[in-house]
Image (tube, rainbow, N blue to C red; front, side):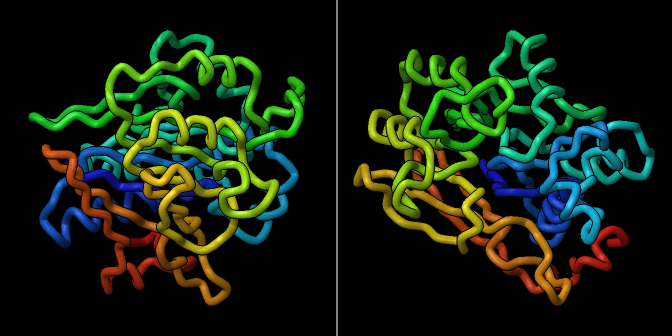
Length: 284
């Protein structure tokens, strides 16, 4: 089972799908599943942009990619998405239209729910078991969305983990080993003192997944052992463009998850990736 992972996309969702399709074509492989660590940039209505996204979008229009590419059907985009069978499963970041996501979440009784016009992107509910199977291989993961807060977040502070999500995590009991934790924030104190989310630290201590993937921090890619002494914690670089227009390195990760629970992790650095720049990616 091959799993593609991205951290913060900030609207560059179509770019992520294009990179996956190109990788499949270049290597003659199939990606089975895409996992994304929040700040997908879910803003279907441009009047609901937060201040940071509005500021960044003035110099980088790709920040508005969800609105432009995933709210109304477009034949060309549909043809791009049909080239790969993989669906994307995300967690909430702090830069999303949470009012839009709240409505969809309340309407769904499942552990994840669709958020786009094509049915290619699903949002994972925090603290709910997610499962994917291929042949004899089963993957179990849990998502923890948003960012940590030192206080109980008010309803107007939806960038922070909400009380109902904390309740879901407190009630969560793993009936089978958890393979992956996907979160937006880091565990508390893990990357920086007093930075991160306590609930992520508690989950890692209790459940000890094989891997924890996260974004948000703005720090470089890293792969280190977690404080629980077991989990490999991976900070994935944001999928963004550098000042020279090139695509950021270490922003595209592949896991090869095998039947015996052996896992190979690869950061994609193939030469063709250099073709995807700020000014060219939409035409490739």
